[in-house]
Length: 80
Image (cartoon, rainbow, N blue to C red; front, side, top):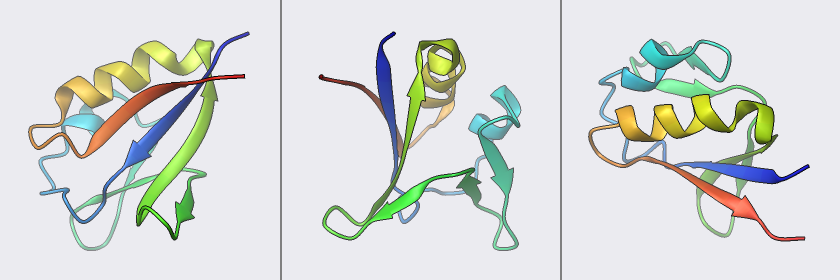
């Protein structure tokens, strides 16, 4: 089964909430008006939040990426 990584640049987020409108399975509203990626781990090197998902969640992850007006969300395939 293919694996994918959601990469979320929280600093770039403007709080448009398009991703949250797509799915609340991956995103939750934070107190500052931005969103948090549920279950994500902060990557100190890239300064971005990351979450590994399987292909079952790919479509909603890609829709979240497409809904972000500032491209703060990226979805990449994880190579084995």
